Amino acid sequence: MTRKQYSPEMKMQIVKEAMETGNASIVARRHDVAPSLVARWTRCYKRYGTFYPQKDVPRSNGSSPDHKRMAQENEQLKKLLGEKDLEIAILADKIAAAQKWISLGYKVSLVLRIIGISRSTYYANLNHQPKPKQVKGVPALQGIGYLKAAVYQ
Image 1 (cartoon, rainbow, N blue to C red):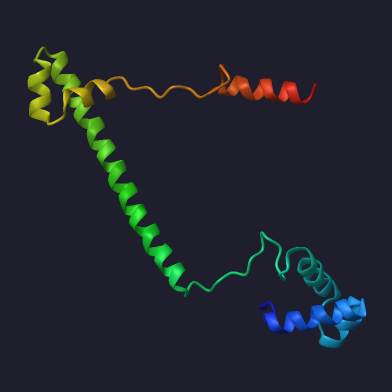
Image 2: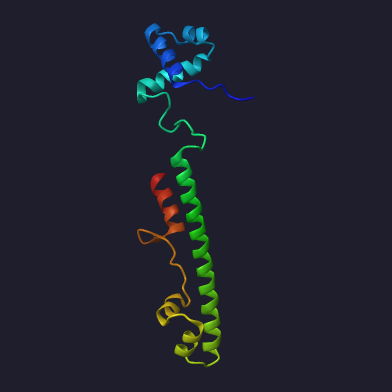
């Protein structure tokens, strides 16, 4: 079962009638619309100057030029993200291979030149561990407990 769609002109006519008469129920019966819907349209029109609350903007069917442009941009960004993830995985494999050969006694500069990564990249990613998040000097998980304790005291 599909929802009934009302044009903005129809909504405006119904809202004007409801505001003039001051009775949404009578206007709703006259136009065969639910009274709560007429009341909602009227309330939203008075508050926002439109029939939709700020979070409930009418949806497009996806055929607008902006929607198509955004969809294309979204696809491009997905491809770029996939490429970057692949580059990171390849770099991690190269660094692991370099560590293996260096641990066997080969010179760092020789191994890195053969593998094809710079020394700065190697040392920047060597044993790279992300730092834990901190909230004002307190580790994040402890910070959450700290914040809860502060709020509920």
